[in-house]
Amino acid sequence: MNKHLQLFIERYTELEREVQRLVTGLCNSLCAQCTQICCRADICEEAIESPFLRLINKRTQLDSDAYGFLTTTGCGIEIGRPTVCYEYFCYDHLYYQPDEVHEKVMRVLGALPAHATRNAIGDAPLSEILQEEKLAEVDFQTLEKQLGESFQALEAIKSFYNEGALPESSDRALDRITFSE
Ligand code: SF4
Ligand code: SF4
Picture 1: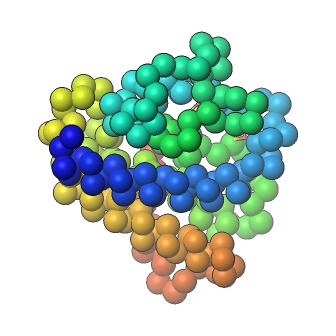
Picture 2 (picture 1 turned 60 degrees about the vertical axis):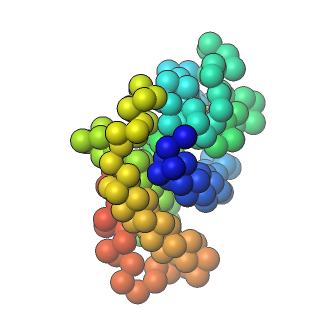
């Protein structure tokens, strides 16, 4: 494997694990009671259509045509999920945030994997590059910069959840994170 890609995947996996841990902690209780689960097999398919995500999740087919990777206890993909799976929060999650700062921090947290993987070739995200050989043409300089920005924002967010307040001058780190349309 291309050395840049291998290094990027190692660091991206670290980011995804941390984002997943925090998002699960925020969402688990509400999602566990949900009767209209937003997971869909066509979203799960992104995890096997994307060569980048496949290198992480090692999956080649859905577990079920109807439910994709969804299990009775949540997502069956340990790591290497589509970025939208972290970025999407339903109205209920936003509604139950205690204030606007918590809502903003949660939304930025969910956007970190997508931000890190934007603009891989032109404005195409890394997970939307569907030909494996094209991964060698990726702009790793831009990806590394975005990944670094995601880690900086993650540090501020971890501090927010641990200390109950955002560190001074963390606004810039949070505001740099872009959201998918
Ligand atoms: S994010 Fe919202 S809609 Fe999706 S499973 Fe959780 S509670 Fe249900
Ligand atoms: S979280 Fe898992 S089960 Fe849900 S849509 Fe994403 S990949 Fe599929």
